[in-house]
Image (cartoon, rainbow, N blue to C red; front, side):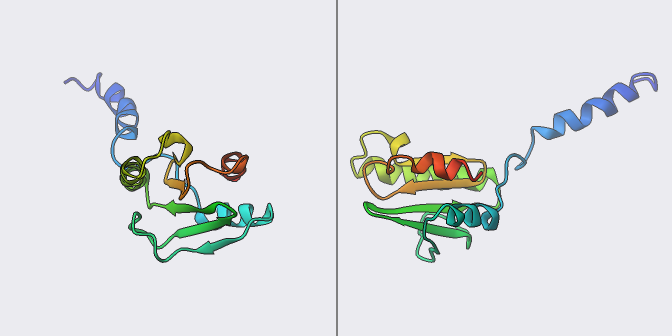
Length: 128
């Protein structure tokens, strides 16, 4: 490689590295939870969440059950959580997995019922 080509390689390096590793969208659990609470919902810590290997887990109590939120340290961890939740939901007869589990960046959220309550996904996504 000549010295003339080096600037092009150096300029391309950040673009190549941007697709590697665990970058991506990361939501701040404190900000999201504060926003959901400000919209009038009760959000509590969930220390019994067996799907998520993180201490940043929360539950929104709704009349049909709980909506659980797991904030992974990065998108890769969140994808693993999502896969586990989808597997269990499918084994328990969920008719449409998109109606019971969603992921956005490092946040995975799911409902322990056959579908999210009307309007709840928009409410949560409005806080992201």
